[in-house]
Each structure stands twice: as structure tokens, then as C-alpha cells.
Image (cartoon, rainbow, N blue to C red; front, side, top):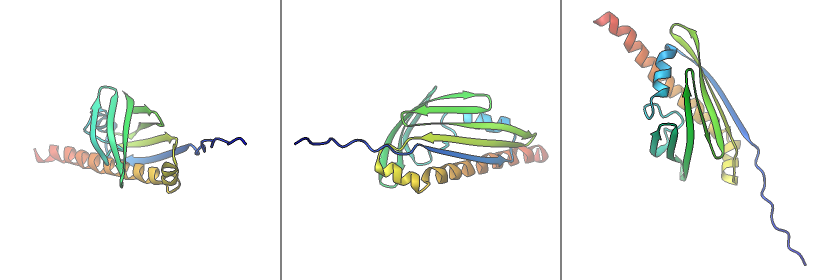
Length: 154
């Protein structure tokens, strides 16, 4: 009698795309996003994160789950791209006007176990990206507002 070895169940690859207009000049967003460690987009739940030139090493927390995450990243004018073992993505910025910028986030990832697949079905990644982009927008719009008011107060 032969025993069949269980085959790995392939999980469906996921793609998340989120767009948001931000009331701030593109230069301010680029400076904020390209400054390592200052804008932890997608990493609000990170513990022990370390940004280095072109490299990220972090422990990501999601409820009781803990995952070690390493990625390489590249910053270019108007864009930050990253790649890791099971995910990749980019943040693209486009000028809409002198004080408006369109920020687009693309995230591709491959669930590699049943827990990740369940989180994907619950659309956790999209909700996290939306939340982080809203947080980034609020911070940058506040800084832009202070900068515009600064010239009136001085």
C-alpha cells in the first residue's frame, strides 16, 4: 500500500491598490517618504524595526501573530519600491497641482499558509493600507498647513 504525500495547497496571490489625494506639495511627501524611519508606512504595527540604506528589517505584529519581515527598498523621485520574500509593492506620487499630490499604493503578496489566506479573505491588507495612507495624509497635510501659516505668522 502506498501513501500519498499531501501536496501544498496553493493560495491565491493578492493585489491591493489604493489611491488618495493629499493636500500637500509633492516635494513635502517625497521628503517625508524618502526619509528612512520617519514615515513608517505599513509599519505602524512594527516592533523592533530597523531601516537601513535600501534595507528594512522588522517584526510585524497583527493581533497575537508575530512575523519577521525583511525587505529591500529603492527610493526614486516620486516613488518608493520594495520587495521581500512573499510581497512587493510601490508608493507612487504624482503632482496634481502646486499644493495637491496623488499618492498611489500598490501591494502584491502571496499568502503562504491558512492564517494568511484567512486574513486575505477578510481584506485585512487593504484596510491596513487605507489606514496607513490616511494617517500619512493627515500628518503631511498638517505639516503643509503649518508651513503655509508660518509665513503669515512670521
